[in-house]
Length: 223
Image (tube, rainbow, N blue to C red; front, side):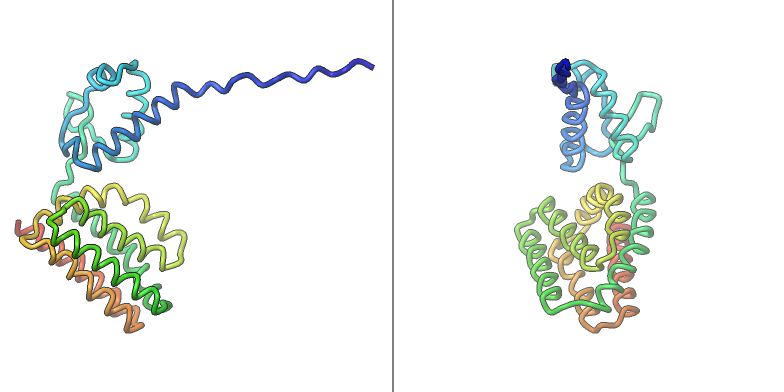
Protein backbone atom coordinates (compact mmCIF):
# COMPACT_ATOMS: atom_id res chain seq x y z
CA UNK A 1 0.00 0.00 0.00
CA UNK A 2 1.50 3.30 -1.02
CA UNK A 3 2.22 6.02 1.46
CA UNK A 4 -0.02 9.05 1.17
CA UNK A 5 2.16 12.07 0.76
CA UNK A 6 1.11 14.87 3.07
CA UNK A 7 1.42 18.24 1.43
CA UNK A 8 2.93 20.99 3.53
CA UNK A 9 0.80 24.14 3.58
CA UNK A 10 2.27 27.04 1.70
CA UNK A 11 3.05 30.35 3.34
CA UNK A 12 0.03 32.45 4.26
CA UNK A 13 -0.05 35.50 2.03
CA UNK A 14 -1.33 38.41 4.09
CA UNK A 15 1.11 41.13 3.21
CA UNK A 16 -1.24 43.48 1.41
CA UNK A 17 -3.99 43.19 4.03
CA UNK A 18 -1.40 43.48 6.79
CA UNK A 19 -0.10 46.71 5.27
CA UNK A 20 -3.65 48.03 4.85
CA UNK A 21 -4.35 47.23 8.52
CA UNK A 22 -1.22 49.06 9.61
CA UNK A 23 -2.17 52.10 7.53
CA UNK A 24 -5.73 51.98 8.90
CA UNK A 25 -4.64 51.88 12.54
CA UNK A 26 -1.98 54.53 11.96
CA UNK A 27 -4.42 56.96 10.32
CA UNK A 28 -7.10 56.18 12.92
CA UNK A 29 -4.67 56.93 15.76
CA UNK A 30 -3.62 60.18 14.10
CA UNK A 31 -7.26 61.23 13.66
CA UNK A 32 -8.23 60.44 17.25
CA UNK A 33 -5.14 62.14 18.68
CA UNK A 34 -5.77 65.27 16.63
CA UNK A 35 -2.51 64.89 14.71
CA UNK A 36 -4.76 64.84 11.65
CA UNK A 37 -7.11 67.74 12.50
CA UNK A 38 -10.84 67.57 11.95
CA UNK A 39 -11.69 68.78 8.46
CA UNK A 40 -8.23 68.05 7.03
CA UNK A 41 -8.23 66.51 3.55
CA UNK A 42 -6.47 63.19 3.02
CA UNK A 43 -4.69 62.60 -0.29
CA UNK A 44 -4.05 58.91 -0.95
CA UNK A 45 -1.07 59.54 -3.21
CA UNK A 46 0.61 61.76 -0.61
CA UNK A 47 0.06 59.22 2.17
CA UNK A 48 1.36 56.38 -0.01
CA UNK A 49 4.48 58.38 -0.92
CA UNK A 50 5.20 59.30 2.71
CA UNK A 51 4.94 55.64 3.74
CA UNK A 52 6.81 54.29 0.74
CA UNK A 53 3.97 51.97 -0.32
CA UNK A 54 1.52 51.65 -3.20
CA UNK A 55 -1.85 53.39 -3.18
CA UNK A 56 -3.85 50.13 -2.97
CA UNK A 57 -3.47 49.51 0.80
CA UNK A 58 -3.95 53.23 1.47
CA UNK A 59 -7.20 53.18 -0.50
CA UNK A 60 -8.34 50.12 1.45
CA UNK A 61 -7.54 51.85 4.76
CA UNK A 62 -9.32 55.02 3.67
CA UNK A 63 -12.43 53.04 2.69
CA UNK A 64 -12.48 51.41 6.15
CA UNK A 65 -12.18 54.82 7.81
CA UNK A 66 -15.07 56.05 5.66
CA UNK A 67 -17.18 53.08 6.78
CA UNK A 68 -16.26 53.82 10.41
CA UNK A 69 -17.40 57.41 9.95
CA UNK A 70 -14.00 58.94 10.73
CA UNK A 71 -13.65 60.27 7.19
CA UNK A 72 -16.29 61.95 5.07
CA UNK A 73 -16.61 63.18 1.52
CA UNK A 74 -17.56 66.82 1.95
CA UNK A 75 -16.28 68.07 -1.40
CA UNK A 76 -15.28 66.70 -4.79
CA UNK A 77 -11.65 66.92 -3.62
CA UNK A 78 -11.88 63.59 -1.81
CA UNK A 79 -12.10 62.35 1.78
CA UNK A 80 -11.37 64.52 4.80
CA UNK A 81 -11.34 63.91 8.55
CA UNK A 82 -14.86 64.17 9.95
CA UNK A 83 -15.68 67.60 11.35
CA UNK A 84 -17.71 67.22 14.55
CA UNK A 85 -20.00 70.21 14.08
CA UNK A 86 -22.40 71.35 16.79
CA UNK A 87 -25.24 69.56 14.97
CA UNK A 88 -23.27 66.29 14.82
CA UNK A 89 -22.38 66.53 18.52
CA UNK A 90 -26.03 67.15 19.46
CA UNK A 91 -27.13 64.14 17.38
CA UNK A 92 -24.39 61.97 18.89
CA UNK A 93 -25.26 63.03 22.44
CA UNK A 94 -28.96 62.30 21.86
CA UNK A 95 -28.08 58.69 20.98
CA UNK A 96 -25.54 58.57 23.80
CA UNK A 97 -28.18 59.74 26.28
CA UNK A 98 -30.54 56.92 25.28
CA UNK A 99 -27.87 54.25 25.66
CA UNK A 100 -26.21 55.57 28.81
CA UNK A 101 -29.59 56.12 30.50
CA UNK A 102 -30.19 52.37 30.20
CA UNK A 103 -26.70 51.71 31.56
CA UNK A 104 -26.94 54.00 34.57
CA UNK A 105 -30.41 52.68 35.48
CA UNK A 106 -29.02 49.15 35.52
CA UNK A 107 -26.05 50.21 37.66
CA UNK A 108 -28.36 52.05 40.09
CA UNK A 109 -30.42 48.87 40.54
CA UNK A 110 -27.42 46.69 41.30
CA UNK A 111 -24.09 48.06 42.39
CA UNK A 112 -21.57 47.36 45.11
CA UNK A 113 -19.55 49.60 47.40
CA UNK A 114 -16.56 48.64 45.26
CA UNK A 115 -18.35 49.95 42.14
CA UNK A 116 -18.99 53.31 43.80
CA UNK A 117 -15.38 53.49 44.97
CA UNK A 118 -14.13 52.71 41.46
CA UNK A 119 -16.28 55.43 39.90
CA UNK A 120 -15.06 57.95 42.48
CA UNK A 121 -11.46 56.98 41.76
CA UNK A 122 -12.08 57.63 38.07
CA UNK A 123 -13.49 61.09 38.85
CA UNK A 124 -10.32 61.79 40.85
CA UNK A 125 -8.27 60.73 37.82
CA UNK A 126 -10.27 63.20 35.71
CA UNK A 127 -9.63 65.96 38.27
CA UNK A 128 -5.91 65.24 38.22
CA UNK A 129 -5.76 65.54 34.44
CA UNK A 130 -7.92 68.69 34.53
CA UNK A 131 -5.73 70.36 37.16
CA UNK A 132 -2.70 69.59 35.02
CA UNK A 133 -4.55 71.21 32.06
CA UNK A 134 -4.03 68.01 30.13
CA UNK A 135 -6.98 68.02 27.72
CA UNK A 136 -6.13 64.73 25.91
CA UNK A 137 -5.57 63.05 29.28
CA UNK A 138 -8.89 64.42 30.58
CA UNK A 139 -10.73 63.13 27.51
CA UNK A 140 -9.14 59.70 28.00
CA UNK A 141 -10.05 59.66 31.72
CA UNK A 142 -13.65 60.66 30.97
CA UNK A 143 -13.97 57.92 28.35
CA UNK A 144 -12.69 55.38 30.89
CA UNK A 145 -15.37 56.56 33.35
CA UNK A 146 -18.16 56.07 30.82
CA UNK A 147 -16.74 52.77 29.57
CA UNK A 148 -16.74 51.57 33.18
CA UNK A 149 -20.38 52.61 33.54
CA UNK A 150 -21.27 50.58 30.43
CA UNK A 151 -19.39 47.57 31.79
CA UNK A 152 -21.05 47.80 35.21
CA UNK A 153 -24.47 47.67 33.55
CA UNK A 154 -23.63 44.05 32.73
CA UNK A 155 -25.51 44.21 29.45
CA UNK A 156 -23.43 43.10 26.45
CA UNK A 157 -25.71 44.92 24.01
CA UNK A 158 -25.14 48.25 25.74
CA UNK A 159 -21.40 47.69 25.50
CA UNK A 160 -21.59 46.71 21.82
CA UNK A 161 -23.74 49.67 20.79
CA UNK A 162 -21.87 52.18 22.95
CA UNK A 163 -18.60 50.80 21.57
CA UNK A 164 -19.69 51.81 18.06
CA UNK A 165 -19.87 55.43 19.26
CA UNK A 166 -16.54 55.36 21.06
CA UNK A 167 -14.30 57.00 18.44
CA UNK A 168 -16.88 59.69 17.71
CA UNK A 169 -17.28 60.34 21.43
CA UNK A 170 -13.54 60.90 21.70
CA UNK A 171 -13.63 63.48 18.89
CA UNK A 172 -16.72 65.17 20.35
CA UNK A 173 -15.36 65.27 23.91
CA UNK A 174 -12.13 66.84 22.67
CA UNK A 175 -14.16 69.78 21.30
CA UNK A 176 -16.72 69.73 24.12
CA UNK A 177 -14.21 69.74 27.00
CA UNK A 178 -12.09 72.43 25.35
CA UNK A 179 -15.10 74.77 25.64
CA UNK A 180 -14.89 74.76 29.46
CA UNK A 181 -13.23 77.77 31.08
CA UNK A 182 -12.16 75.52 33.96
CA UNK A 183 -11.41 71.92 33.02
CA UNK A 184 -11.99 70.79 36.62
CA UNK A 185 -15.69 71.46 36.04
CA UNK A 186 -15.71 68.53 33.60
CA UNK A 187 -14.73 66.17 36.43
CA UNK A 188 -17.10 67.78 38.94
CA UNK A 189 -20.07 67.26 36.62
CA UNK A 190 -19.66 63.50 37.05
CA UNK A 191 -20.12 63.56 40.83
CA UNK A 192 -23.96 63.82 40.70
CA UNK A 193 -24.00 60.66 38.56
CA UNK A 194 -22.30 58.63 41.29
CA UNK A 195 -24.49 60.19 43.99
CA UNK A 196 -27.62 59.27 42.00
CA UNK A 197 -26.37 55.69 41.50
CA UNK A 198 -25.75 55.44 45.23
CA UNK A 199 -29.43 56.18 45.99
CA UNK A 200 -30.42 53.00 44.15
CA UNK A 201 -33.14 54.92 42.29
CA UNK A 202 -32.97 54.17 38.52
CA UNK A 203 -35.21 57.12 37.58
CA UNK A 204 -33.08 59.56 39.56
CA UNK A 205 -29.93 58.13 38.02
CA UNK A 206 -31.37 58.49 34.50
CA UNK A 207 -32.38 62.10 35.20
CA UNK A 208 -28.88 62.85 36.50
CA UNK A 209 -27.37 61.40 33.32
CA UNK A 210 -29.61 63.52 31.08
CA UNK A 211 -28.76 66.66 33.09
CA UNK A 212 -25.07 65.80 32.79
CA UNK A 213 -25.24 65.56 29.00
CA UNK A 214 -27.46 68.64 28.63
CA UNK A 215 -25.12 70.73 30.83
CA UNK A 216 -22.22 69.67 28.65
CA UNK A 217 -24.11 70.65 25.50
CA UNK A 218 -25.12 74.02 26.97
CA UNK A 219 -21.50 74.82 27.87
CA UNK A 220 -20.40 73.86 24.37
CA UNK A 221 -23.16 75.93 22.73
CA UNK A 222 -22.16 79.06 24.69
CA UNK A 223 -18.50 78.82 23.70
